[in-house]
Image (cartoon, rainbow, N blue to C red):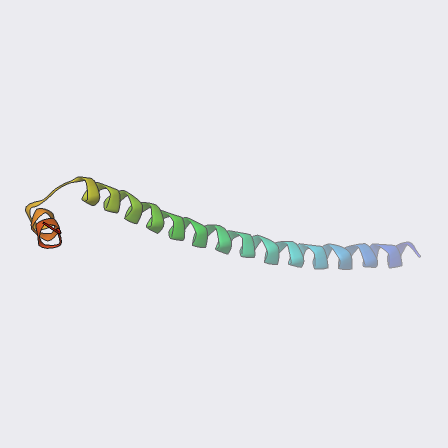
Length: 69
């Protein structure tokens, strides 16, 4: 009887350990994907903001080309 209880506990431990490993790998994959995605978004946001505020000769020519004057 004690041996049966121990077998059930070992089986539950193996199953829960397997499920925890799957959930942990899914969490790591999601965190890595979010890190890559948001770093790319933030990098584009920073470069676009910097490029938008900095007036280069090309941007000045582009703005005068599309101006309504």
